Length: 94
Image: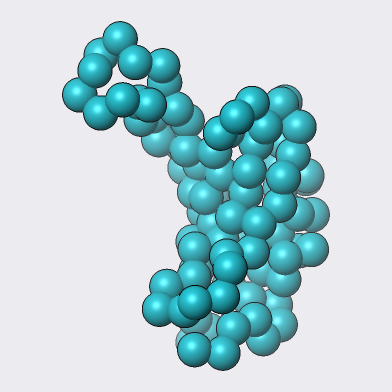
């Protein structure tokens, strides 16, 4: 079975940022930046491919709502998307 990873996407600073979470490593997490418009499924798939990853079969993007300031109901909302992945080529030496 291939090792699985998680990609997350959020919009800090007005631009969407997609990054792959790499645990137990000191290398920078692979990331891809988009513009201010929510990237389409095709754009996200292409970005993941550029980074060397593909979604695991059957995986779908899941969206979570958070807030900029914890426990403040008046705080602006932060949307975070996540999907499970596997590498299409060797990525990281631990």
